Amino acid sequence: MFSTLIKWFFLLVSGGILMVGLTPALQRWLDHHGFIPDQYSYGDLYNVTNLGAFKEVLFSTNRDLTEVDKPKMHYNNVHLYTIGDSFTYIDTSYYAGGRNKHVWVGGDHPLVVDLDTTKTNVLVIEFVERVLQERLYDPDYKRIYMKNGIARANRPIPISSHPAKSDEKESKLFARFGSEINQRLEFLLFNSPFFMRFKELKAQLMLGGFGRVPGAVISHNQQHLFYEAEADTSYVLSAFRHLTDRKIDELVANLNDIRQYYLLMGFDEVYICMIPNKVTILEPNHGPYNHQIERIEANPALEAPVISTIDTLRNHKEWYHLGDGHWNNQGKRFWLRRVNSLVAQWASNPNTRQ
Image (cartoon, rainbow, N blue to C red; front, side, top):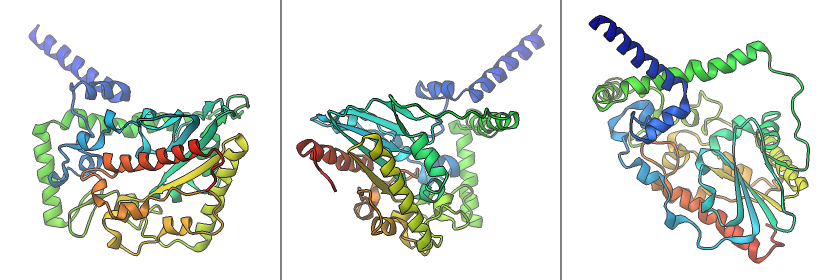
């Protein structure tokens, strides 16, 4: 009898763990309510490396905006639309437009909107530096920023007439439940304070004894952590790989194409904003920097007006997280100031052109 109860106990526990591992939404709910460890509570780079020196104990405090950060005035004659990645994952109530809509880059479907032509419609598209070489070449930029960006409600949305093949469906299923489940299960089982002590000790031994930081790149002075993709030159996304002028010209042409697409859709203006990688700001001498952002912004063929951030961020290294690859709430406030001032400018002068 007792052995049967033990078997059922372990069966239920293992089944529950597997269910949480297979259900990201359930895991987030349990994280939020404190039932299981939050895998990103101290920053994604700490999460990858487990180096205690980069455990950002006040991560959520340093990350989150507050009610004080919301605009005191909303401009009803300006509708603001933003397309961006994790750097601009911000509640739209923090924007000053009369209507504010955001599109998360990487979705499978566009945000369908009904543009109010009696208002000024402004679109701001944000790119973090490391994705420029990943997402802004043909055909990717058309799929990511145009097809799956924003669509007019009164215009048909093209839908592929070719259903996914069985092997494609299987690969997507594996991508969701094959690779990600291992990471989620690891956090469920081994992310408690007890296990984290051993993981931190192992990580420190690897760094001190072998100079290795698996899963990330550490700065020369060992004060900062960076994503491998942005710092390691073996990655095509690295800011320290050589970029020819021809490639820069191609990026500029594609940015112009994106802008023209949305102008024809009915937007009054389309701005671009490129946010530098953490390594670009905190360790610019990590290698021979390719100056991708400055070269795009200074390119005479660029037609899109730019919200430039790189010079300001170079003077505010503290706006990036210690244990994470993103900017903190100070960086977010900087972004909001720039975008909301743009909204105010359009509100006072609807004929604004950069």
